[in-house]
Image (cartoon, rainbow, N blue to C red; front, side, top):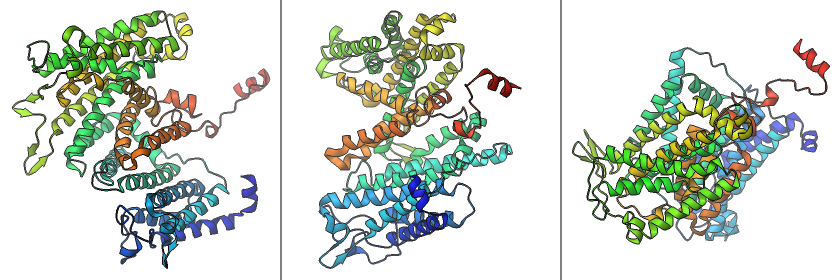
Length: 579
């Protein structure tokens, strides 16, 4: 790296940046495939045979064009964080170009498809990759500047306007990502490449916005105006059915995400706050689901009882909470790996009991089918909803109910985290012996963590039973517990929005990567490994995990930028600093 900095002078680095930006624009105007692939012509008229309008760029070609223009603007604009922004834009270029080039290469095209064959030429992908590499090299040849930090003391009206626009843009981006390439790849053999390409473009753009401090500024404004931010986010979530993502497919997927998010937030209490590793947590979701199925009038239920959903949900939450307290009782004697084994055993006991229909409460291999949908005020939740001239897809009422459920669970979690018991959980997570020495009743606190976490999972299980209409033991396998745990760690342990984001990624990514067939799970696992490598604190960490794992202060500012002198060489230096 130092050798590169010595060779590349500032003038030469700027020339490389300009060359990279120009090459990116050229790449957007070139064909990317020399011939039609086995699955049909590549999207966005990138195949030479259909390249009749070079200036009519769209899709990934438009993304490449935008990144190239942005690089040229940054190269000549007086931006104090030029190298940091250019590096992010360069990686965005490489991601877009490499994803599409590799897909053409391995999807039956070969080297000839991305270069030249039989007198046909298509170098768009190669030129795009070279452009991105030039921009990255020119950026890292200089000094990567610290992220800008904007003043957050702005008029309330300005803050509200910025937050409103930001959250609306976020809503539109979510809808765009969900529909990139179609619904789960159905009818589009290139859906996976389109989705990953868009993801690479957005990652580069967001990296550039983070470099200039915009995303951090919006986050700080959101923290200052939490009530307004939560209200706008809730409205944006409720507005998703009115966007292009408002289809039966995505409403079903979004409802599943909500159920897992609510369950993950409950697990976050046990793992994220109290630091208790639970490998059988999905059993509490299953307990809530089976209780709801038995008290909702299902034909195969053990009891001939049909109770209102609200009452059923309360019963399911209470029963799951009781089992949570029972499972939590061994925490008085065991911790660490031994506790993980105890919870794993509980999860397996639940699965085997449900599979063998012990007590006649689970239906065994036949499950409990025919759980009726929720019906409030004459509206069945599994039917489409018409509002004026707008007809919303089926399942939209379940989506709304789950949004409300997630909001309720988030409120419970936030209040617990900032309460006395929440601080006790965090103390136990950091050092249980020290917490006990300070007077914290660690046994009661740990049992309470299991009880509350299981209660929230049981509540989510009640919604799950009515939404799926069939409750079977194989819906609550060990892998589901691992998925929930991964959602908590991926999003950020102890973080409320982190658990929601983690659950969303773990459910959406496999759906969007179906186009890669046999490689889907490998790519999914690789993505998780990369995220954990570069974001060990999670995607949306709380301030404790950020300071612990990312060397950042409470506000997300890197420690080296705080200008705090750390001198532990002697008392004289400390005394001088104190004076």
